[in-house]
Image 1 (cartoon, helix red, strand yellow):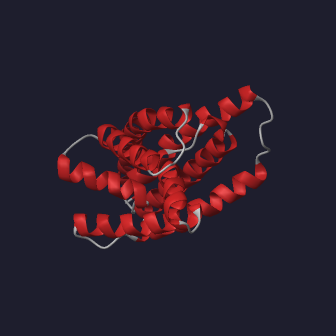
Image 2 (cartoon, rainbow, N blue to C red):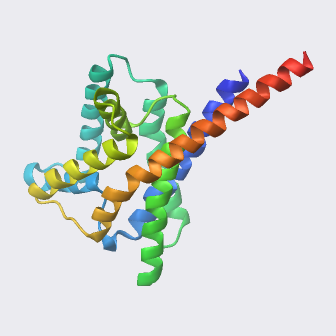
Image 3 (cartoon, rainbow, N blue to C red):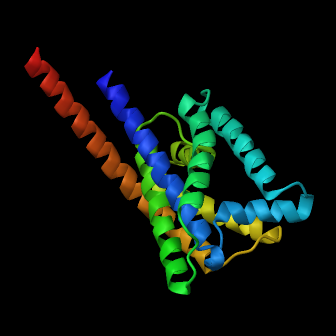
Amino acid sequence: MREAWLRWGFFLIGLVILGLGVTLTIKGQRFGVGSWDVLHIGLFKQLGLTIGSWSIIAGVVIVIIAAIGMREFPKIGTFINMTTVGLVIDFFNWLIPDPTTLIWQLTAFISGIFLIGLGGGVYISAELGAGPRDSLMLLIVSKTRLSIRTARTIMEVTVAIAGYLLGGPIGVGTVLMVFTLGPIMQLSMNKSVETLHRIIEIKAKEKIAEG
């Protein structure tokens, strides 16, 4: 029971950090958008609907592909991720004022990239289910035995190129996100897994001592 609570704690804290990071990149979007948003905008330009609709459609398709590839039904955390992150983004977008100067926009954007990678690594370490894009990344890792860093970078580059070919916008920030998210997430996940296991081990020893 204690381990379950710890895992859910890591999971939810990671989602909050991730949502905050996405909000900050939105606040500093003058420098570009993330690779997936490049794709969503490209699909919108070519096929209509809305950018948000394509984000949802892409998420559902990716979850299905990941479930088939991993041969397992998505975990409950995947569905919680799909609903919770959006709410967290809306909350922080309401709470945090828009930066009015270039330096603050740049600070927000760079901080957002770091927090997305950090939060992603924290919540994935709980092993309660990854969001659509991270599920695809983990599928690539499981099938190719690549590191998370390499798999994430390949995925981000591929999606950004596809989006650009469809007419989506690419900026300096897009390129920065493509090549930095993977390494940050890899480091965050490794440290989070190590920390989680250490805490679980300490709690187990405490329980034995109490008994």
